[in-house]
Image (cartoon, rainbow, N blue to C red; front, side, top):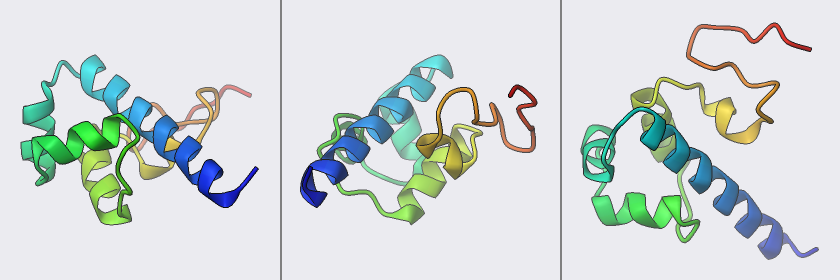
Length: 90
């Protein structure tokens, strides 16, 4: 698989997780975008896997969604559910 294909898979997965977290938090896209300091269209592109995302933007989104940045890149069983908590499941 090419690097470009791998990057697209990561963008798709990260975008889907952000959308899932936003919906679980009961936030509209415009609310999350405003709180994270980005435009609603940028958030839409991120959620659809159509944007290259900086660590700075990812960090702000995670802060608003109360998740560590690492949550976006871990499997469900290994990821802390909220900032400051540890998942003790093995």
